[in-house]
Image 1 (tube, helix red, strand yellow):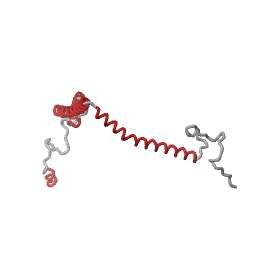
Image 2: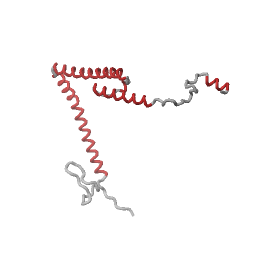
Image 3: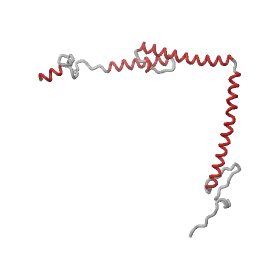
Image 4: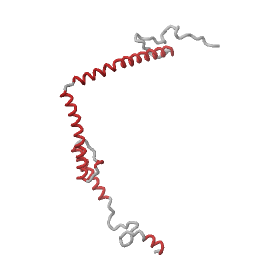
Length: 170
């Protein structure tokens, strides 16, 4: 026994079937048919294509407008923009120079220094210098410790001493 099929396009809306709003949007989501969804998708795609077409039409106009705005700038405005760019470049160069100077003074490699101002660079250099000093003092072995590879006299073995020891059995 097969069930009777009904064409979704010819069915009438009832309490469980959703209706479309004035803007074409489907309300609810219970009994929406594939055809209704496909129609909404097609409509959305057409609308998006229309917006893309409009954008592409207005793009040359926007570029012409920007060129006109740039042409209307006074020489003073153009000079101010160049000055601002040169000042930013000058600040970066001064910071790089100060980084090298602080590295030479503190003994910290310049590539380890971080900061966007001279004060930050100086603070970082002093912090790294203290950390390096602390690390170097804590890495020294205590006095009187015999290190492997040293003879009883406290002087390191020479290169040939290991071979002599092997040959003579001492």
